[in-house]
Amino acid sequence: MTADDGTGGGMLGTREASCLRLLLLCPHFRPDDHAATGEVISRIVDELASRGHRLHVVTSLPWYEHHRIEPGWEGKLIRHEDTEWGRITRVHPFPGDKTNLLARAMGFIGFTALALYAGLGTRQRPDAVYAMSPPITLGVAGWVVARLRRAPLVFNIQDVFPDVAVELGAITNRRLIGAARWFERFLYRRSDAVTVLSEDLADNVRTKLAGSPHHQAKVRVIPNFVDLDRFGPGPRQTPYRDQHHLGDRTVVMYSGNVGFSQSLDLMVGAARHHHDRDDLVFVINGDGAARTELVEQARGLDNLELIGRAPREGVPDVLRAADIHVVPLREGLARSSVPSKLYPILAVGRPVLASVDPGTEVARVVVDSDAGLAVPPDDLPAFLTALDQLLADPVVTAAMGERGHDAIVAWASPSAVAERYDNLFADLAGPSGPDAA
View (cartoon, rainbow, N blue to C red):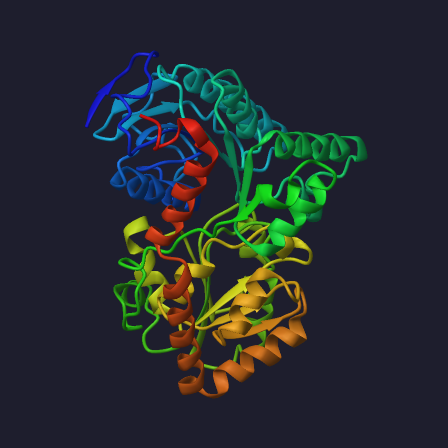
């Protein structure tokens, strides 16, 4: 790989008959793959490149792990790297205080403006443009580039905005909510395809598209993949257990973002309920905006461990160290968000206790694959009852994890997910696609 610090650039090489030129706008990309979306899009790019496509990735300078620009990447608003399959353009993300919504919004706008500039700098017309949300503002950059370069737009929705922010109470102003919903529908209607992670999210988006042409066919369900080479079953006695002195105790774990979307007070309540058991420990592994509040709630509980986010290479061992994984989403959120850790948890063969809205994607996956138990959100008594059921028979519970692994292998491998995107891009490219010489 070679790098330059100029501000020009574009898609490298000429298109062969069997390949497409694709422009991808995303918030994170390798080495900034500590973010779940960074890991997802990095692997999708690898898969698409292996199919012969020419790619131009426009993303942020690495910043996610420490919420600041990583050492060695400072000093430039825009950087370019040429690769075997095309080009990576990294722009400044303007990171700010996670808890300051205005600062975050301004950062998203600044990042989007630079991404738009970089996308328009693509020298050759792309056959398709892909934009990932959040931030939803990146959809604006994708739409403008797609329209000016006469290319179809694929808008990928990881979390539905503003629904999550409204459910959390982060946005309460009626006019602001109304404007955000108008903005959301505006982008959906101007996309040639909207891809979502689950049928719940698909129903959500289709409802907002009702009345627009082809709104049913426009929405496609393409789940995030699981890297089965990394996230495979393995022994529970991992280096992570040794490092954090977990021993042979039964570990009930939450691993992921420690934010306000997650009902982590359930973990605190369960630890308090089982404070007299020496063979059981609760682990919350991760960082986020709600961590300070959580530390206060957990004060005095010796059976609850709060451990910071592990490095990317250590995540499989973290997940394997647990005997039971908890996936808790506050009421209403499971219809607009799918936790990124669900599929890796199932892939390593561990059972899940999901506290989510009934009938939503997470609940269906867990129940239909018999990979654990699902209870209503924010319901501590129901959560404790289900947890006691899982703890009562470790053999039966471990078998749930094995069934979850078998289910994930069948429908969420990287190659299967990339093939769906490959087919979608080819369909949208039409006469300018791979059959055009």
